[in-house]
Length: 84
Image (cartoon, rainbow, N blue to C red; front, side, top):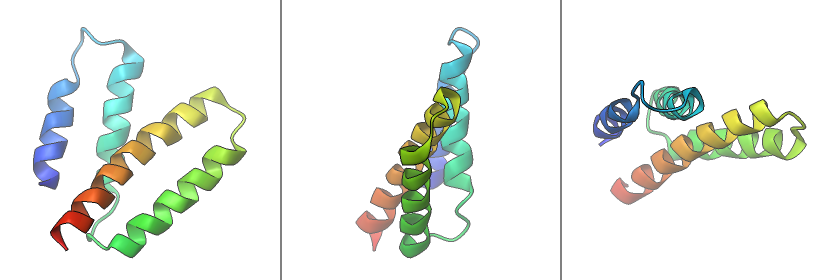
């Protein structure tokens, strides 16, 4: 399932997109890959950590990056919960 999601996100990256869109897809891929084992507690902790960073972020680019990472991690969390 994870490999399928990463493949899907990779397919969405193309030169016709704005660079920010492609960057968002890549950030989601990187966030999903950053969680080696599918440990729900680890994913939950990372999500809480990213949300805390987002809450304190004053930089638009950092906020955009955190939102993209959160989207990928929250997708992963849903998949882990679904299959456990």
